Length: 430
Image 1 (cartoon, rainbow, N blue to C red):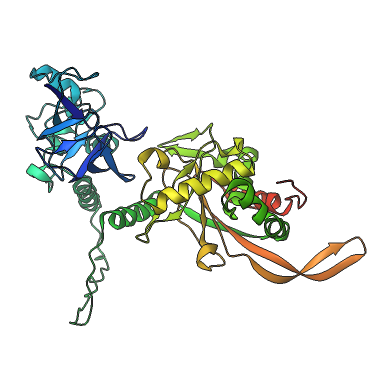
Image 2 (image 1 turned 90 degrees about the vertical axis):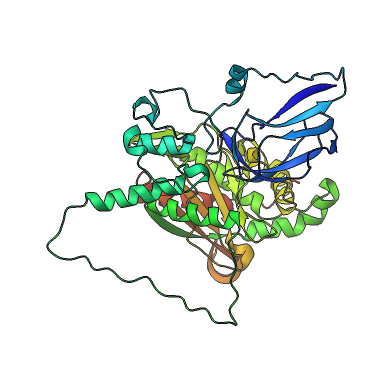
């Protein structure tokens, strides 16, 4: 028999740790290679982790609720002797330390780079801090000595992200100069609950969405511009071709691919929409990775990414849209499907809404909401004069970060998207 360590896998380009949600197997269970063994949550998605080997789950090293670094051991598997790729477990402490790639909140490890973390200060503090907590401390100029005074509410009194945010808020309040005029403070509204009311606890994803929406509003100066687009050519083309499309490709074509295609073209025209902000620096992204908001079975929204959307034709985009939508509906999205987005499209028209003011997903600087397509009377220019005709109209709502995207750029961009939609050739071959 051989003993191998099952390690926390890498679940995305920016994922450095994951939280163990549920073990699907218990110690002593027989497991097959690639069989799901546990469920792990990251800051982007929940996903099942398959076993790297077949054998017996000998020992579970990471408990439910533990935050584990990518590359750290989470279980011991006993495999059949002579199995290929079996890595014999080592008991050397140095080897264990090498496997712990970062500093999760619930594991005893530290980031070694003292120059880029608060570990450079010698305060005698023996608590361990996650990479996120250390990053916040660095950005806010919190020394190791000051960090040691932050009260922790996590396991073993470790400091969580929320602890840091609470501390920064209290520190900011304490640093404000005293005023001769007392501040006006409204008491927190008291919510009365009767016996007929239902109390619903937020699930983990709802809490995460709530936090990120508030965080985005605090970070970005939101401005929204609106343009109405004539979708008649696209509506007529889709009605004419949707049956042939399904017969040829085995799936339906929705309006979403048309929106993403137009957005990708407009981003090529206005690359300063395809950026992120890092302090006082603007990072212009080379790839155009368009996210699309999709509703999960729970009702929560998630945003999978269509990578290099500008390099795909309409059929290619449609296939990716359908693939990602199906994965979302079946809770099969993983962290890679959600990472690296540079711009986002949200179809509020699917809910019957004519327009909306979407919130920017950080660290992007803009997002577009497309409304319901509605028949309206409109003035149409013809060679013989203007006429009133029934047209298919849709509002585009473009929210952008006014810190780095001025009204001129934000307005021109959404107008360019509308121009591309209106210019769609009704005679485009399938």
